[in-house]
Image (tube, rainbow, N blue to C red):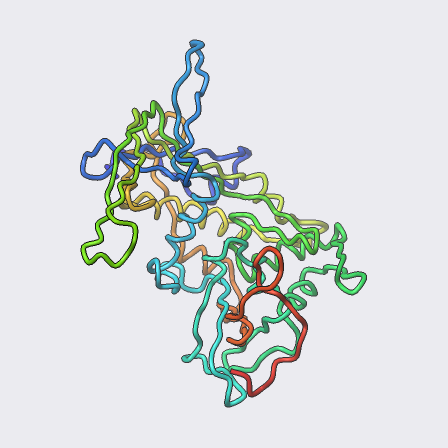
Length: 374
């Protein structure tokens, strides 16, 4: 991104202001000075293009390149070393997150070095609220390999102050306990606070702090074709020709909206006592949001195979800006407890068995883990 910046934004200054939300826009172009790019689309639906009304009573064709949910996935992916490497990048060392792990427990313990990481709270769609972490089977695994006596979901509910009723089929969070909800989620998985998380079984729903979208303005559809070759004749498909949709556009723009009021609501001082998050912790959430945006835009990013884009400008209103973020200092000042990574263990026999409920999800059951189970 060209260095034409005149203003710098810091997390502390933005959070200390009375504004909300903070809206940043980035202009992007396809790498290699290309015209065409490929937005998100689905079979039989294709790309979403809508007619947006303009002030002069005209309309402009706008294409949704990536939705808020897809952009959240992209903003989480920049935290990892690679698409198939679930370790955090060096800059985020010390930031808490979850790993769902499995491994051999023939010795009665699961060795740390031998743990097989299956998913993390940065790769799962429901983040901390995923069944892999809050289900009735997964148990917290210590660094020494011992497992907690009860499911981690029950531990989490206790920490949050959730009141479970009717054999856990109903739950309620008293208003005064919401400070526990914010601080507990922050302690274990601050990324979940940033992108939103929902625990329907406990009537807990927290909206996104950071919402992003990617759209193309003045869009025009480009229809082309592709062909599949079966040179050895091993299939019955022959040589099918298929359609490929791409787009051109006058401008591609990413919009990032940070709900500062929501961040401020996560904690306050009451009669000299801190409720929920303190100022350093809220500043970390701001720093993390800005770091994600900067990381996504600092180099060309591949949103999908045919959508490789690079940023040419980042603005707040009409001002060119840069993001002034020391994420290492923000992590240190947040004083996260050690160890930062929480491992939730599943036996392989439960983790990889076929789900039996109507939605195809993993069927859960309450059972004691056999110490000899692998």
